Amino acid sequence: MTPAANQHISMDLNAITKVYPGVLALNDVDLSISGGEVVGLIGENGAGKSTLMKVLGGAVSPEAGSIWIDGKEFSELTPSEATRHGIAFVHQELNPFTNLDVAGNILLGREKTSGPFGRMDRKSMAKEVEPILEMLGTRFGAKDSVADLSLADQQLLEIARALSMNARLVILDEPTSSLTLSETNRLLAVIEDLKTQGVAILFISHRLSEIEQIADRVVVLRDGTNAGDLTKENIEKDRMVRMMIGRDVSQFYEKTDHTAKAPILEVMGVTTKTYPKAMVNLTLRAGEVLGLAGLVGAGRTELALAIFGTDARLSGKVLLNDEFLPPDSVAGSIKAGLCLVPENRKEQGLFLDFAISENISLPGLKRLSRGLFVDRAAEMELSESSQKQLAIKTASLTRAVAELSGGNQQKVVLAKWLAMNPKVLIFDEPTRGIDVGSKAEIYRLMQTLADKGVGILVISSDMEEVIGISDRVAVMRNGEVTGILGAQDVSEEAILRLAVD
Image (cartoon, rainbow, N blue to C red; front, top):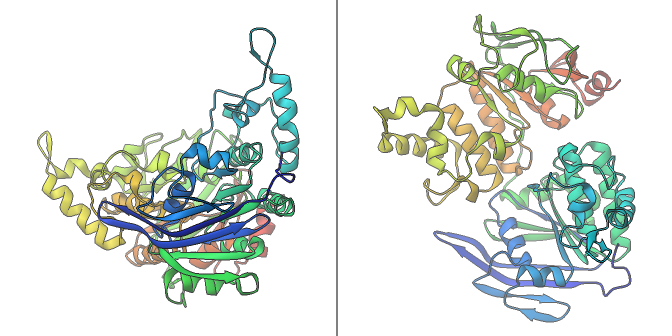
């Protein structure tokens, strides 16, 4: 399963340069890693991390520079060459084949067959896969359907696939973004085990506490260039932040005191399909940031979708400014002034093949249309204003949203709703997979909106975040709100007491 008996990898990227139209993505970048080493690769969204990984995986060709693997020089790699040299990727964006079982996904393209007709030998495949799943401590087995796996389990499935390929270098891109605390700790333990077996690990994450815990060395990218390295004894959060953004973040959570105002959103006796027997009562005040905390599976996202109208409300009512919102009607919610920034921005928040300007203007097309035609000049004017307001980094607003970094994609989602002048904004995991600089910008935006009287409901699994930005914190467990903490009472300990059984 692991290449302990094979030669440990030695890999160097030297002076790598990559240019896209109008964008210098990488400029003379160096990176090295050896077997038995965990290197943390960090940087803001758009710093060049993804492009560098695509160069290493053979997905893109650099304009200049060299790649050295085990003393052999390459001007570029193909995907098959990267695989042949033991380089395996675990991507942040998951793409499992949901029509196959777990073993079929892990051994895709390497299926075992038996008999004269070459029929798939599922028993042998399961036997090969089970030890990997056992090492990862998964809750699913080799014969389980991938369609039934949670997002967190799909992440572990991708890691199992990489380990099954006897990789000498495993590249983990935000591997814990969808994992619970216990699953994260298990993964970090697996990484330590692989390290002792001589596997090299390139660990890309915005969770700097994990970098501190797991990395032997940290490489920092900023604006497509090397911003510096940190050795084990110097890996510390403040140092990493300074190198990533080129300045100190003296006030990361810029929370301001908000005067309590009248209720703007009232949730009364709402039940969801996931927790049909758990009624939720919740009040959000105008100009308030209300955090919604709880463990994974507590029912927070399900509640948000039921409020917004994406999912059905089995019972209960939702009032916005004393007016009842129609159930199961996203259009009705948006018209009333309620908008949702979803957890999965790629699937639920954006049309990836559409231009940035088209995504921003989409909810308000009626206002931007003249008869049957969209006023493109007005659309571009709106998009340019949004780009300036949110500092969306792009060479052109006509580029497809899919080409943007994760942080800038999130800003596009925000831009399209801000253009609707919302009365209430629900943020579901708004900074997941986003760099520290973009996080600070989003926090400032929340405070600015609250200062203007907008009601802000923030769902977050990051307790430091939810404490840092919220005026009050509501805690959920098993589909119910178990308590609400004021600013003077909120702490990680107080939240956990309400969040666990």
